Image 1 (cartoon, rainbow, N blue to C red):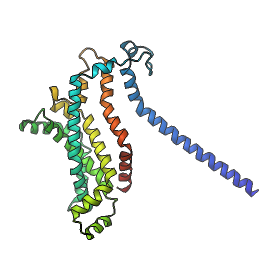
Image 2: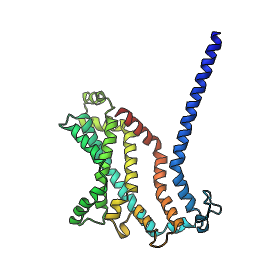
Image 3: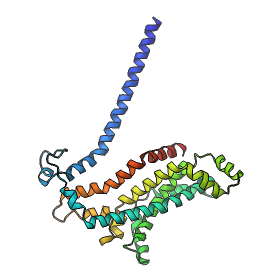
Image 4: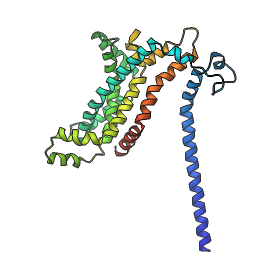
Length: 287
């Protein structure tokens, strides 16, 4: 009798566990489809001739795929925009990460007066829409005669990349035991020596995650680039806008260019996905 009851409870538990796992997998699959469908549709339109793009009912898989849209999209002007985006995103990342790392270290280790208020201000800056900053920064850059230069766009990007990077890195640094640095100082390291020899290597996943995220933000930013840059200095998000005509739009060419804009981001995430996910997860848990 007891064996029968025990077997029944075990079977019931297994069925409930299987049901929960099935629901979780179904939810994950639904979210995955929801987020990937726009990219799949974009690639589909990039591979379709005009007749298929406007065909009804629409189809996701092209019947007669073509590559001519990509060949036309990759012209010298597009490549120039790509170089502009790469320069701005790379320099912004290189400047943001060290500044944010030192700031996050100070806010997590040093007993600075008002550090709680500083963190509150950093959080509040994320609530402000970027459009609020466009006019003031535009006027400053205009007074300094820096409009339509890389420097103007990089300074504008730092206004939102540094706060978010400080927040991410502080969440990671808070979880590191201070005893590790104290042990390094006992062995003869200065505070900065312990920082570079102990803290930086241990925060490598967080640094990689932050750098990747900052690069994403800078690469895809549109508002500041549209306002500050023109002509050959435009970045890819603004350059793609040029494929939209006043009276008509070449959707195949537009989708091909948009796909090419996404390729570097996907490639970077593919190679750094482990560091990116590990850094975000550890930072959120320890923060």
